Picture 1 (cartoon, chains in turn red, orange):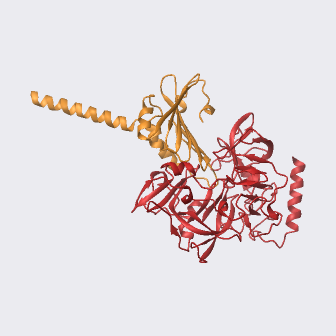
Picture 2: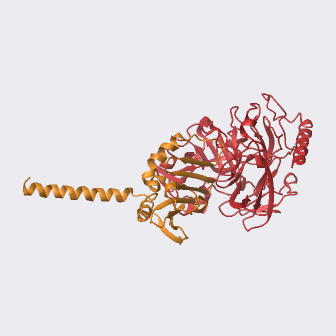
Picture 3: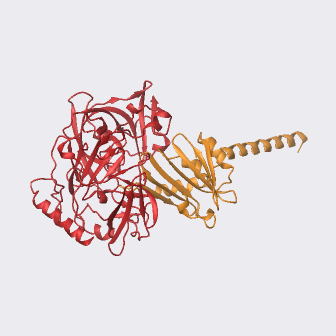
Length: 396
Length: 158
């Protein structure tokens, strides 16, 4: 483990040294370099910065950001919005009304405007209308796709969204780009009946309603003409003490071009709920990979930090741990080694924002950003095939 | 008091009793309540009752809504000591937490949101509520630690 770590650090330094002209560095960084993933170019590539230049300056730690171009439907009236959270635990584009400068077309069902209430597991929520936009990812052709406009003032929010985010500052981002393996954010459950997610509104009154799949908020990648079978999240490793920022790529498509051919990875199929199985310390949990989570969150007896950081682990010394991920059918099976360091010790260095060894308590196994640092993680979209298999799957 | 007065008092009393029973029925909620309250949860959530499974130290009653599967954990004494759920949306906890709902809401307001998490734990002196998961698979559980029957692990509630 230690030698792997040293090797990784060496690799990162070597890359950083060879990449001085690549940008993505944080000029305000007080210490260390800003690691970058090996350069990938092509029309199907979006830059990611974990913290760094694509994120707002006061971002929370381990926050992966991209920028997205959004257009009035079927026009060339467009704007580019950054500080968009890259969220592989969600599907679809959600953007705060405050960040939008182009006009979009309201999606209707039965003649009435469609709105959506999305609840997150941290107890937060977002509410607002579903509108069609032209969305440009990298230099791909624009796709016309229903997106979620986050607007807490739209109509009357249902009780589940009564505390929905009002501003980008409150949420910590201008929006989020969901590129999970689900083609829509809800799917057939929401097409079949009212679920508390989709609503149709008459005046200010919004009522739970079934909404057909094509007008649900869609993963825009699934609608691309060619690179539509998945994505690859490519992030560099960071030194064990952390880094001010890190730069990588979101590559669209799997095996659709010369820059996205799978190599040296194992595919783990997910179940229909979007989970694999993670075994840790003799127990078995549902597990998932998620760039929208900023740590490794899992059940453990490791000591929590003192308040106000009690959501994080603070072991006296860095812990070398391992868990085993299994595909939904029970195979394949692969060991993942990881480390958990003392959160408060790491955060004592104010210049650093990106860490590969922070975690906290949870009921299931949430492989967040630290897992993705130093890896290429493939996400196969449902119903689409690649040489890695048919989605949904993760491969790394 | 006249005969007529007594009759009015009796009617008023009966009326109040009926009102009490009706409102009690509407606000009956599961956690900490007798197993009968599962029926009122089912009604207020427009759900259908699913399977019932018997374990050594408790039984689990399932309730299905359009978006969520709810499991109510019942002790040998017939008291709901825990509730777990999973689905595309969270259930309305006000109904499911019953007499614990107020203190949960108060504690929730005191619990700061931590950006970047996909998990929430809210604790009061009498109840623990936890949420976790991700899109299309939002999970959670609520339990009253004092009501958990001896020998039942919290890990069984999921």
